[in-house]
Image (cartoon, rainbow, N blue to C red):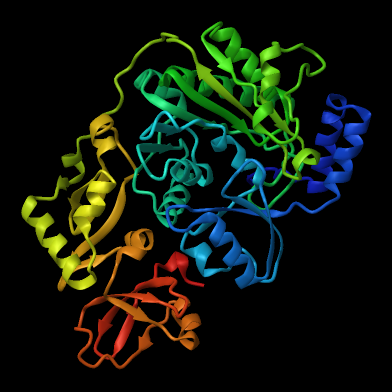
Length: 498
């Protein structure tokens, strides 16, 4: 008997999906506002970038990049490190600086959630990014705290973890741990533990702007209801896991009320008098209040304190976010979190002798003060096989038994000729390496960025097997190279090659 073929679902054109969403949302706006929305959707959605203050000075970097690449930029009004790029002689995704994590390409709307947090009173906060992949907002959390404290970057999807890890490697944060668990678990595993929690909730992405990274798709009323219920469970978990007095930001890239205002209404009903939604009107240059009603129900007046970014308000994709403060304990059940000691994965603390040898090696070959960096950044060194990692002390103090997918920053590994640094470590601390640099002439840069080896006349200056820090005539870090006779072997990670 012939096997019946499974019917494939035909995806509607993005214009048709957008029209369906517009039709749903029309009743939520006045006639004038809806006309303004339609007009805005006819305009281009400008790309935006957010600078990495761990590696550059944001204002100076924005100016130099604009001049170097012929960009026309405009500051994002609610993000001090964000710029729209309204025209670009060189695409923003094709620069050396982008590959080295000097900036992150991100829709301007997505820059708002992390900007809502207050960090002044918690210089080294414990932060949970509950649904972190692909990692853009995680990099923002690292930047806002200048890589202090600890960010647990969690995502429940196995398929999305690799993308998250690569983004964090490129950004250069050391005070991070990547985990893969259902976000609903953290409230019971770690009640009242975190200072700040970001819940960028899985959603329908009905934001009226279809992009390559966030394409709009058709979605049914049943799917919206299912998403809303999961978002409510995730937000309840976040409320349980944050400390009294701590803050939770709830965000979605959808304009569907079922996933926005309805979720906040459910939270207020579940935790009456124990949570507070902050009024965001003073934090935004233009009004962007949440809805009073979705046409069926009238919401608690506090819900309107959240921000609903319609595309015509700021020239962004549609977006929703709220800043929530936990006023007092909410109780709830407790479960023992999963446990996995470091020795189970052959991860052991570097001995004093090994640490001294590594430190001496880095001073001798690069004039790099490892001890100072470790002390200033509250990092300790651990070894797994040949690889050496710098792990934040905050993780060891609070989550040392929590199974992780990645933690800290790879420093390097032991090799035949001593130690071989990692690309990520040098990229993060590049200005602190005083020697061991190799200047590449302009005519060889493109070949190097393609991953090709370079023939050089080393003379007696470089010993065989030495790892050199390669830079161009502008002083930009281009990667690491290994001396082999008269050849500089290219160690550029494959993901960074053009």
